[in-house]
Amino acid sequence: MLAWAGHGVAMGNAVPAALAVADEVTGHHDEDGVAEVIERLLG
Image 1 (cartoon, rainbow, N blue to C red):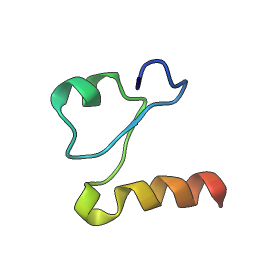
Image 2 (spheres, one colour):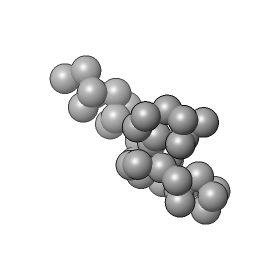
Image 3 (spheres, one colour):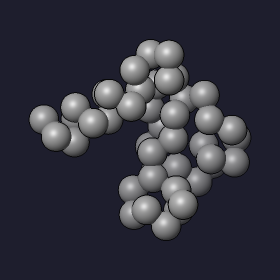
Image 4 (tube, rainbow, N blue to C red):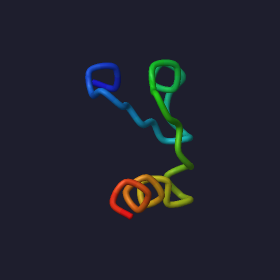
């Protein structure tokens, strides 16, 4: 799904296979990585 998405974002704590195909790696889920990406995209 990450490769198909057009711009795949993986969490910093994702499995190595996801990190390898992601276009962007954001912070760990404990560090509000999802919020960082959403705020940047909508901001």
